Length: 228
Image (spheres, helix red, strand yellow):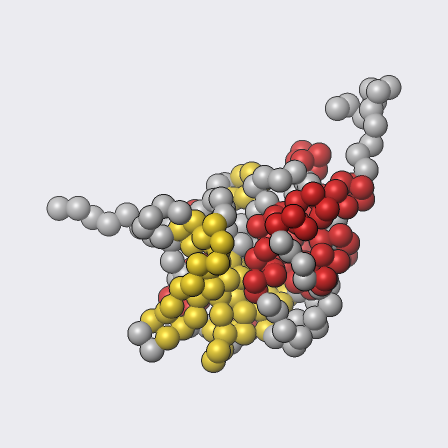
């Protein structure tokens, strides 16, 4: 609505944030007090372009352009809960986008070392601005998502903010001993499940945790195979 319209009423983002937690996050069995407190505090509207701010607290994936999305709040909350971040861990967020997931990790108060990796400059600029104010300890890195951020590793926890067919091998190799990847994985069945992935002697082991309608990260889509 035009702000010059006499019927214009500014959005109450604080109230919308509390409704998001009470109506979307808690009913999704998110009970970790650190996750709840972070999602109550962090202004999600600052993680979207201005044109989308009115929809910042809706229960949907918000399109950010170039095939990228801000993951719906319910899924983000559950991913943070199953990640079980431990104080002092080093964390990599792959596909950090506009910074919401990385900033939540920082706001949870677990003294984590957080690296946010993003390849899309426009999204990263929004994320850097969000983190400058709310999560100044997040370290941003520009680069191809498929390569991870090896210079800052190894990582105890890697979170991928967007669905993948499989965790890129280079990213998996950046896990510390006993580390885990939390990512929405869309395997051959076509069903996307947020999964815990760990390295094994044979490669990796994937444990599906819960289904989620998360769009694929275009940059991490496998190249089509040649058919002769």
